[in-house]
Image (cartoon, rainbow, N blue to C red):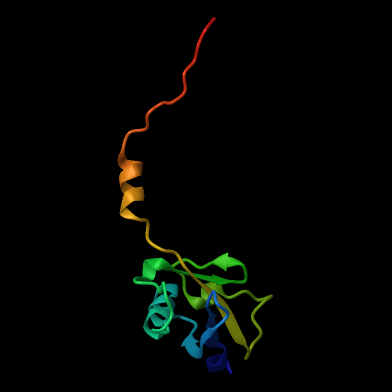
Length: 117
């Protein structure tokens, strides 16, 4: 019985409503490994797919999961039904554009002018 609880069945819900999975993972699996699995299974026909693990955010029970945590640590006793399928939402965060990086590196110029009368 303990072996069954050490396995979690997870499906990943994409922003367009389609799903990847469900697939079974051990409770000791890291969130980073889950993200790698999402990258490997990402539908090729979808536009704006993630390029790296850093582009993917996984959300479960309203919380963004951290890469260094395991599934067992992220499990919510209120939301996860034993033997049921857990749905995690996948959000793709595009990397910042080069223009935005350059703009943040430039020193800010004060555009406010104060006049004392």
